[in-house]
Length: 148
Image (tube, rainbow, N blue to C red):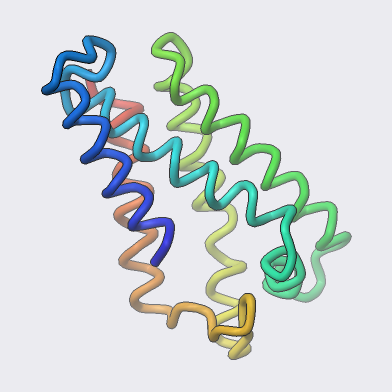
């Protein structure tokens, strides 16, 4: 739920700043870039901080090699993508890359839900709500990638 809150609140606050005269945030498209970047900063840092890191490592589907390395790599990609979202010249490509990354990581969410895992002491989001969230997140990235 925290990533959704970061996306919505970050977008709303950035849009408000645009309405109050911050020219770089004048419009929904740049505001959405800020909201999505904030979301990926939040989720990216979770790949490195305990107890989240251990939970994310446990979420990696069995059989994939080096779950710890995969979690580190995806965290780095999320943080790099968040930074690139804030640069207008790279935002479209960053959003497309982050959408692909989210789709590539989704099987870990499916696996975790089916195995009944916990993340930082809480059960992972059940599959159907997680799928709905994933559609929202990928949709936001697509809106940036294909938008104005």
